[in-house]
Amino acid sequence: MTSIPEYVIETYGLTKVYRSGGGAVVAVDKLDFTVEKSSIFGLLGPNGAGKTTLLMMLTGLTLPTNGSGRVLGYDIVRESREIRRRVGFLPEGFGFYEHLTAEQNLEYIAALNDIPKPERRKRIEDILSLVGLYEVKNRRVSSFSRGMKQRLGIAQAL
Image (cartoon, rainbow, N blue to C red; front, side):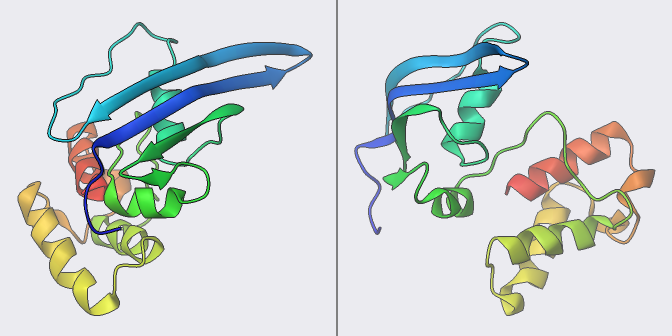
């Protein structure tokens, strides 16, 4: 895909139902919406409204129960890897390997995203500098403050 489509996000009847213990919780219910390219979009709602679930479906981290969606023209189910290569997502729980250093965590994420090895070192160093963590790149994440972990999460999303 070379050009950005008219809509950068499209959903049609997107639904997510969580089932447990014989019950069901509808987290996202038949959502239809589009976001045009070059627009600014905010996703607002109270706790439990389905915002995180929607973002997880849009990035392929969880599958929809029904419906379909596209991000940057890529299908959220069949082409989720392509979406994750182009879209950064910082969930509330950071998901780092606490026993690894900041640099090792980013190296691992870069490898998962198929960033060529020769490119990784420079990109990781540039991003760590950008978020103000270059000087502590060799420290274990377990020693980081919450604010430092937030900045590492931003680095990971970038």
